Image (cartoon, rainbow, N blue to C red):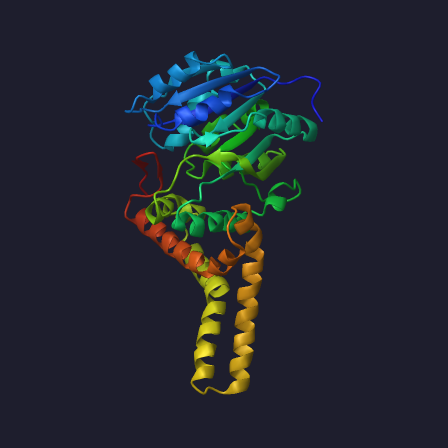
Length: 356
């Protein structure tokens, strides 16, 4: 279904040193086949690589929507960098006059009909926030091992069905592509209401849901992140930047999460290996077979639950059996996230780090 009137939309792109990726992503916003009015605001957040010039040049060569480059003021105390850049764009004159604001990262490439679909769904379903989790790059071996697991674990923390149910408190969004109704954003006090949040997308969704708004989150293969992770270190940085924040900086939450992950995902394969060795070395048959069966069942069930995500990322079904290894690496990244926090170099955005 399509609305009788297509609302005005302003896309806000926070950009800090994004000159390398904007030529691959900004044209996908300029090429939207949206029937209504679309304006694009690129917020240059103290870039040193010519981001503003690249954005302006791409806009000058386009016959589509206008590109307006805005320079963000110096980061105020207590603000997270990305939120400050988004706040700058969402309070610009263009954004004040529109019906919806599309918050999208500089490294996200959109299909031509993305905005038409999102606005149409928001209007027909009366959504105040709609979000699509972009298809992350998974090309290198470590990306194939860890990226599908990242989305899988995200879905365990924030079940999509619960997040999309107005009767439940669970709320989530994916910051790469978030369409928010401007009136609702103003009702919650704008992005100032989440000014210090590093996990800004989920914080925004929670604020809107608490205010009585309706939210929706889905997966999108055609909404793509063009940024790679440069092997294990790249994925490690992304996760360690926010993992302890996700646990509300709680030592008890950290211990519970680590123990829970290890018991759930590591105990079954350990049971399989230990009991197999025991059987080969003459251990008691009946208890060993029971432990082996329980271990195989647990490992099989977790692998079965992971198969849809490995297929979503076009990986082999056999990759599902590596979930325990991915879980152990995520445990290590979570512990490192806590270490960084207590060392005063916690989560940040584009070269900025935030202390305790």
